[in-house]
Length: 156
Image (cartoon, rainbow, N blue to C red):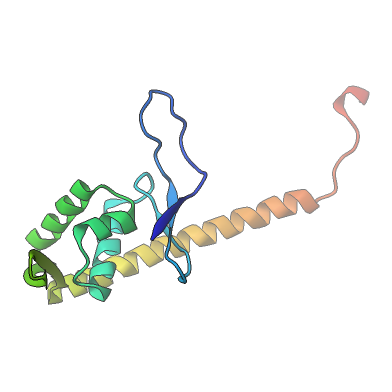
């Protein structure tokens, strides 16, 4: 598994690391999946991304969640603890490897309801954003298609 970084990054003005705006996860033989990076992902979006991943893959490690969402391992740990404290996720141990202790993160019924509610709100925001962008694109196209006045102000 490797990560391809989108070229949209902030500049290195103070020697600090770039903030990644979006990134793509590519696996051998799989399609590329676009995810918002930490610079553009809200807390709700991160909660939804983690809960969606856990719904499909409850045995995902924190390291895998961090890699897939583009946030630090510490942030994933913090968010998972918050989701557990809210009662939306339950952590249970299992033996992935006899020499290692592993965890499964399961969505609780309250977590499933919260995920659905947050997903509906997220979708409504994105649809509104899409409609606004579509209207702006149409306005820009209209500007470009409108006949231009070729006389310059100096000639008048």
